[in-house]
Image (cartoon, rainbow, N blue to C red):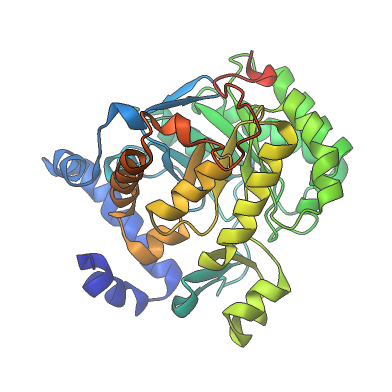
Length: 373
């Protein structure tokens, strides 16, 4: 058991979840400025191994373990976060205009299930503030993703234009971008996953995408098979890849966590989401025969969880709720664990793990897609 799990987590969990989150961000921001602190963090948390290096959508990742969006919504710690051992970080969700999000309380822990329910509602300071912070970055050791959404008062017919406004303000600052159409906490947002609506958004974004930065789409785990089947051909043509998955609003999974979780409005993340997200990764990989790069997220608490998602078809993975429960040493633990698993399985590099649970599918290279050529 780590120091975090044995002592620090209890102290943090005595605080309101949002207060604890803000203090963690403040500590990271301070570490960026303290002499010697960045080098110390890098020595403590970073794993350097050529066999973990992978290329996805034309970008080089020093390892496959990334930080999911929501932790650093306003791009305050883009320099410090890679020092925790992440192979990439995704910032946001950011909207074209600042917005306060939903009323508090809006973040709830369920420690026995290692789960969180949130209804944050895209609280952020807006794209202009984020662009100012990102333009001041002195170094960029890992790829930076930027997750974009829309303000809650945007009409469905105006959604494509609002995504374009957010993208235009940030397009020179992100190595890749994620179109968030799957958060359950903005009314009507998930309706934008309908094929024609999403195709319009992606078409408009690609018209602005002069650098041909990879654009991923984050999908809800609650999509039905027919919806997924309808979306995938279009996503292969118009996106660089998909992120599987966002939080779930499944009543049955919330009920498994407990009556309190079932009665709490918002999206469920953490360990209870693990199998549902992995199942979707497997389906996307199977239906596209490995042609569409996948970033897998949902319930990753250790290296075995990450490896399961890679074998299901993910090229990269992300953690967030796992970080809350396992602490800042989680990226290092996962990367070291992946090295051990690769040795056990006789794998020379992490890319050999991708899609291993699909023996009949000849995996396609994920270094490029039609949308990024």
